[in-house]
Image (cartoon, rainbow, N blue to C red):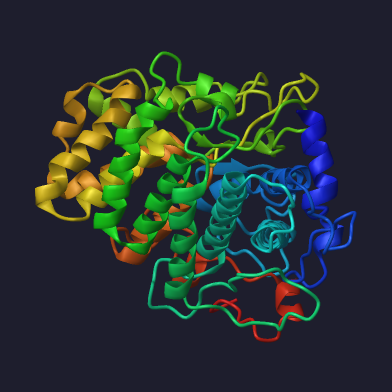
Length: 469
């Protein structure tokens, strides 16, 4: 399997080194070994190119950025030695920040690689490919294109305001040297395109996958629920999330109750995981700088507060992940972060089933009192697993339910994929939280998004910087 993934780098994806990506960031093209017209000619070459798209989620620009986003939220506190961490702890990131540039580049690289493969398959260049598989691969590429566009939108666009003109530049076709420069698309248009891709993926990608380093139809629907929640389409987000919850057992997805830490040791092989890149071994691991961080004060405070309120020794999620965090033996989410030569690599879980329960809980709660029972039922599944008494959720006052969902989602997902930061942005932008309520340095609206990288601006004169940067 390792050889398959290494070879895919030569066929279907860009080289992700920082030096290679610091030209015009929108001009990211796959560095194929063959001429563009000939690099996909067979079913095998199509599969190899698809492997390259999947490989993109382990890129340097994406994998370490987990730490940066959790420092941005205050979920983690960074020490010295984290590349590009400047400004994240104070929510004052500069447009020349190398980590921001790498993240921007890596996501557009995934989009462009997916677009090249979509174009080749739609043109019938993979001679002899099974027609069903042809459609599946196109659907998988559209999932990846949607996820990368969404990753960019929520970092660099005003995703919390569908009426805003400040979305991102959508790439609907391969970027070539003669492709005209483009201005930012409106946020509403970004949501339309992302959801269209996910709707098609939910119908066409494989219905069942053995390992969750590949996307299934349920994965596509779960990501759709997340996007709809961010879009504030709460009825539809709740409906899709409930479908995922109902259908999950039929396809082998389930929450793990016996040993919560197994999720982070098994990552893409665990039944709760909806999507995580293939990682096995030090070379192929999703390298991060987690060993150069400590738990944030706010994370500890809400974990301790909820445990005290419930009369239990500790929140099991916090206990497994962070109470042994200061030791040199690892932690519950990234157990192999110190022993780089163990032969086992850390994973990167982009989405898992517990998040879908929390999406459903919030989407229901935001629809008013008649939906509170449904919201409590989904929140209860997550808190029960965390070791809380069954009465905890029932005793939360109605006017505190929405905030309780946010805090438990923070404890469940902190330091995984940035959800605690984006929830903080959404709640603040919606007026559910005051600026500075969670993190004192998050004090002004312009801090809710990151700056468009300086080198992207220099290569595209139509690209408008975010306000105040």
